[in-house]
Image 1 (cartoon, helix red, strand yellow):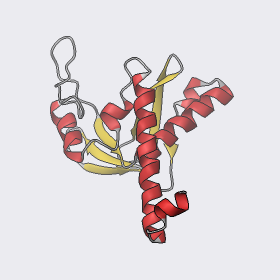
Image 2 (cartoon, one colour):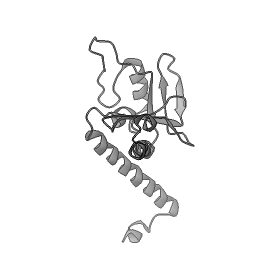
Image 3 (tube, one colour):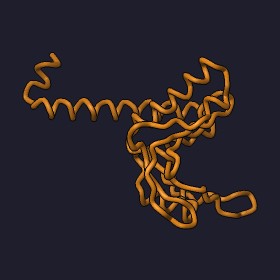
Image 4 (tube, one colour):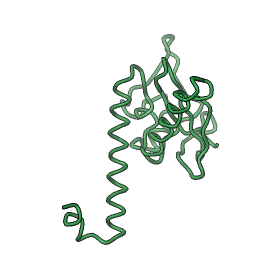
Length: 158
C-alpha cells in the first residue's frame, strides 16, 4: 500500500517526503510535550517555526516570537535575553531534549542533564543582545524544573 502511494515519486522525492514527515512528527511531539509542562517555553521561544526576525525582535525589544507579547519583569523592565536563538529543525530540538532527559533518567544528576551538548553540525542560530551579532550554534542546552524540561535552546556562538 505504501509502495503504491509513493511509487510515482523519485528516490530523492521519497527521501524529501520522509524528511518532511519526520519533521512534522517532531513538531507535534514538541507541541504535546510543551503543553503538558507548566511554564515550558522551548518551542514557543526557540522552535524552528520561529523566524530569525522574531529572534531579533526578542533580543532587541523582548517580544515573544510566538505570542508577539512584549515580556516584562514585575517592575516594568523589559525581559531581554542575553541572546535569542532558534533551532534549525524540530528534530534537533526534540533530540536534544530526549538526550538530556535520558541523562537525567540514567544518572539522577540534574546538573549533568543540564550540561550543554555539542553536535557535529549546526543546530541553530540567532542574535546576541547588545551587539546584535548573528551567530550559529553547534551546541544546545536544556533546563529542567521538577525534572521536566522547561526550555531547550541553541547556545549562541557555540
